[in-house]
Amino acid sequence: MKAKLIVNRHYQIGEIDKRIYGSFIEHLGRAVYGGIYEPGHKTADEMGFRRDVIDLVKQAAVPVVRYPGGNFVSGYDWEDGIGDKAKRPKRIECAWQSIETNEIGIDEFQAWAQRAGAEVMMAVNLGTGAPADAKNLLEYCNMETDTRYANMRRENGFEKPFGIKLWCLGNEMDGPWQMGHKTAEEYGRIAAETAKLMKWVDPEIELVVCGSSNYDMPTFGEWELTVLQHTYDLVDYISLHQYYGNQANDTPAFLARSVHMDRFIKGVVAICDAVKAKKHAQKTINLSFDEWNVWYHSNGEKLAKWQTGQPQLEDIYTFEDALLVGCMLMTLQNNCDRVKLACLAQLVNVIAPIMTENGGRAWLQTTFYPYMYASLYGRGTTMRTVAECDCYGESIPYLESSVIHNEEKRELTVFAVNRSLEADMELALSFEGFGELLPVSHVELYADDLKATNSADAQVVAPVARDLSGCKGAGQSVSLRKHSWNMLIFRY
Ligand code: AHR
Image (cartoon, rainbow, N blue to C red; front, side):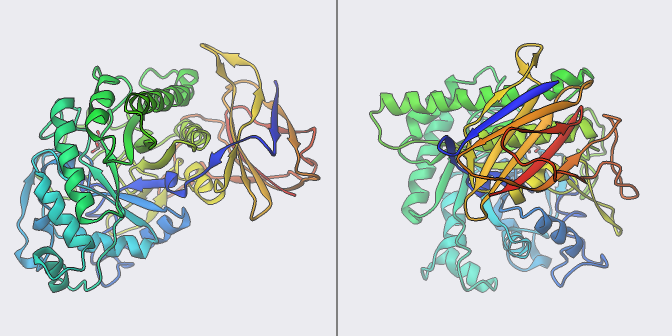
């Protein structure tokens, strides 16, 4: 099969905000307890954080981590998780029917994030919580005043404020499964009042208001319109969440889901801009795709209730899942003019690219690799390309691609998935305006078996270096194997 990718130096989509390579840690299953935190583990540091996990998070250069939920946050009292550990209450946690020991709270997570080189994106409880709780939490984290909550932070050993910039106004408030679920009208009002208070406390923060929990929610569209009518002037981003699965075992349809994701993004952009026009506003609302991933292998699992650190949602990812994750990352990159934040949900053990054994090894799922390479090499400007290739089904192109120009490094990075399950692809590259290009590297992720998985014992699906030396970029071709993910780097 033949395909062509045309890139012209003058045609760009926009600058990538590195925060689109963010991730997410929720108090859920073994994400915190047994994931990032395991005192007694041989790699644990003095706070009980696993150094082997931190090293893998750093390997992917994860810039920002959303915390502490997720559904969890909608019942969370952040004051339970600060101060003397011996005095912290144990609580029933209703979202995931577990017991929260509160051994880890905001102070510890902030310390973990610093060690991992990431910024914290904090979610506040707008389910069972009130605007005042969010205001107090913000005072605790960011204020230097001689006042109750700022002083509480000092008493807990943190003289300097954390300076947390990104804040989510609740989580999935449109979902009936959410504690404190609200109508768009109810949520719009409480989100506006909370945003107002929070920006009075710290005008430097950026706020994310909840959009729809997925594109197929019956309230999609109306929800965004109503919520933005109430909050437009007070918030900076609106959230999108979306998970995909291959329940029907239809791989071509599964690999096409990034096209659905693209439609979702464009739909939300249109709604934001409609509200902007209606309000005669100058300001533009951007998008925070703060939960996205493949999630379905663990659907329907039955677990004992009221446990701590029990394995939950531990999807073991296949090679085809990694292909879709790669395509979804390209979709985020190709929408970087409006998607400024995004979080792969989640980071450790729970629907995660990084897995741990209790007391044992940490290992990488198939999905880690496209995520890591996008985060490391997908920084710069996304180019507006013209791609010519055959399509299947409902106009799904066999080629999914993105091209990132890193001016500082004088590099062009092409991310590409060949969705065909049968045919290799001869991809002709036409780069205009960059002069002579030198091939630097071709990294490929490929497995014969679409259902291949990794484990602590075997990295069956792992990237390999391919020879790119014959490909000088302009007018030349590179071969992309059937159902493969690829990263090609050229220097000029
Ligand atoms: O990431 C798992 C869950 O998915 C989150 O808690 C929730 O926000 C979403 O429904």
